Length: 419
Ligand SMILES: [Zn+2]
Ligand SMILES: [Zn+2]
Image (cartoon, rainbow, N blue to C red; front, side, top):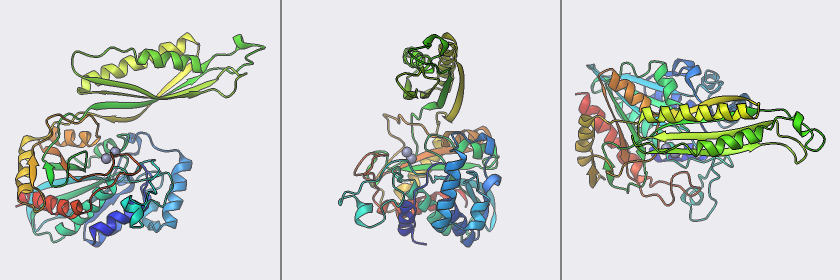
């Protein structure tokens, strides 16, 4: 299997969270061809524990598109409705611990650049799906996972390898459903990793600091429409309720217990100048370094939403569409990963983590926590690559030489623990 052409193939067909039908289908086929036991569809994730699942219409459209683009019909039939997780399991020649790796597969709703200096455009593997793009390197992550799968298919080790291909990392929506299904319960060591994140090619971090707890939610306000000239008092203005909530959510104080973020990212509603708006929608996120503080932010946001709705005699509903917690990387694994990186060709700068920390969020946090709760260990590693533009930007790209050396590094890490 060629890791670079596999990455380019995934890049051409970017699929957003819970619509990774084609990608997951290819993953199942390859794992199967390498001799892995493959678990996928409703066997690999808990349907009700998914968050922010796209509408039936979007799921069906993506499903049909995947079929046209070469997904295996028999395989994706089992994934219908957005069950796009895949787990590959292979046992070594002798008994030993279970080592797992997690790879995210989803793309983003970003329109990819057509500039002639954008490498995927230049090389002819720019996104085929207009308005969607692999702008966070998850195409590379999935390709690395498959490269690793092939290496470990020789079964020359003692223990079990579990490769977890996760849907819907963006928006922190997919990992929890895999945890809920029990897929992490037998894992002794878990490695998660990300390419890029402003770390240059040749540099490697065995762990990460500072991932934030976060909650993403959609609030719906339901009022009554009425003629704005003839009978405004008969209406109930949903947009006013939402606007009141917006200002008060941003007025929640900072916390002395640790840094926080809050953002109302979307506010929309209403239909015309002469109609009292009967519906409004807001998309909100909270973040904090501490899980407890994030819960308190969430409580206050919900309080504001319900009282703002009450002021204008509106009905309202809050939908949680994404969630993550902080990550505490296991020190032993950070050191083990660093030691292996130092012996892997291509890594010239090896660090435990970036002191300044991350300000993002990751739902691999739920997987790491589950493993640690059971007495196991987990870490979130960063593998450097120079990037011509930031993550989630139309000109985002990776340096493909990072792919093979990442496979090599993960292969070394797995075998070190499976001796
Ligand atoms: Zn991203
Ligand atoms: Zn990412």
